[in-house]
Image (cartoon, rainbow, N blue to C red):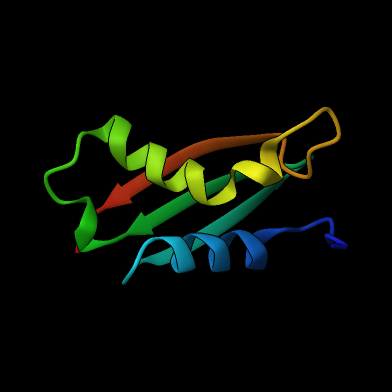
Length: 81
């Protein structure tokens, strides 16, 4: 799979596919860094750690290895709808 330098659309799609009913906003900070806002009713009642684990699980392959297309998620803002 060829991946563009700004993965914002890919990240958004993967998280929305993995977390039913979610809405995702992705901001590319440059140099493979991203900030995310993820809104989903499915986060209600989950600890912050569990919420973040669900988000990371959706994009883990994009963060794996020395040449990973995502270097860091600088911030995850979770909201319940």
